[in-house]
Image: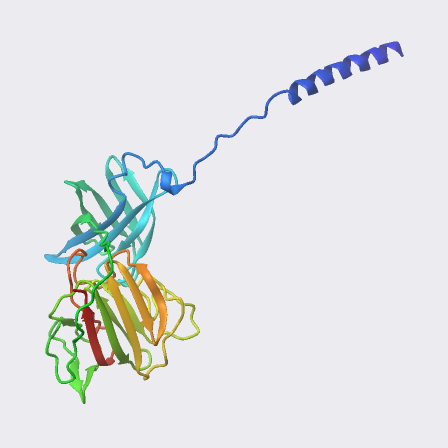
Length: 332
């Protein structure tokens, strides 16, 4: 019995010492991780790449526009978005950066081909240079410059309103190619079927654009602001959730807050104000986008020279549409 008691006291003593030593130890502190993007430390090797880039691609001797955004996700991962010469903005889940050269892959969209596009590039004299390889084995070179912020200071002073469509003919407009399907019938500007786009001869910077239009069932068109940013016009079903590819959107970038379009074959109105990159879109009296920033050019842009004035152009290569009013009020 004595031996058992002694053993128990020794065991208890040891256990007590052990417990005491554990409880007296200070809890190990975990290192706090900073999650504030405003104070993020940008890795030295990627700091000059991060931002938005206006690209120009040499596509078999023809200059076509493109666009790229590179962003930092977390501590060192680069992500972004890319716009080709057609289609909408495409998300880039990972941009690899090795020895000063970046690369990423983009799956096909409306190209009708299989296999990824591979974009490779690097910094060069303050800009970008690189190549785009498609699934058909074609390879094109590109150059890029940092996109301008287009910030405006102060209130806008507006000039006099201009009727871009005179109700009689195509004066002040030019088709994008010889397959022109635009005519004027009984005072209505009509695109009879898919053909050329219609572009104003005059260029504009900041403006208020007002149009009245209608389209047949299933048709698709759009208005390009400065020839670079498409506002989508299409026969979108009213029961869809608003999205960046549907009626009233800035194609691929900005979704309207509601599907405010009317039925096919009804006259509709759209009022668009563009100041710098900030756009407001009012559809049939409802504001669906309010002073939102357009990040970059959309597919189908005439060029990627975002700091310059550009024309208004109406997409005519998708389907028929009619306009009975097109007026613009430029900023002074």
